[in-house]
Amino acid sequence: MFEAFTKAGKWHRIGNKSMTLTARDDLIINFAGTHDAHMQADAWPGFDHADPAAQLNIAVTHAPYRRVLDAAVADGADLVFAGHTHGGQVALPRYGAIVTNCDLPTGLASSVFRWRSHGAAGLVNVTAGIGTSPKVPLRTFCPPEAVVIDLVARG
Image (cartoon, rainbow, N blue to C red):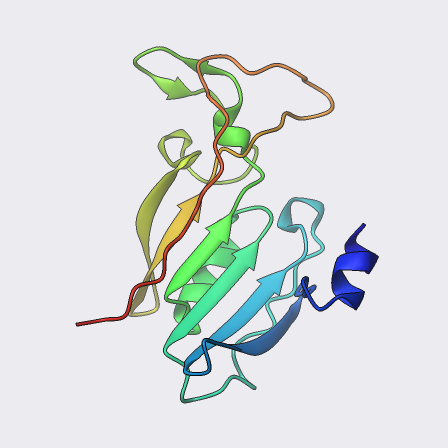
């Protein structure tokens, strides 16, 4: 399926790669992403070849490990999107997630938060997603979610 989307120009694979896209003829966005950090397949590509005229630097990673968040934010990511945690998948009422399946605290298994690294700061969105782990096909007190982001001009 990814092949068809890629050929149609609707999908760009940015695992351990970076790229720049222009939207609406005037909005320049730099993207950088990693493969799955949970599988040790991540190599932060940086925004080194990014367009300096870009209004936004966005990082994407499957698993929100601290090393990836640190690298992305220190490198200038304004916004980082991640998943992998399934929101903890199994949560308790009034407590939340029991595990994150990464090295983040359980309170960050599904949330938007500010991340700071090497004097820089960026927003991170870890989505609970809609699925479950194949090893534990169960979700409790953790509703599925899909995130929609609206980009709005400053000012």
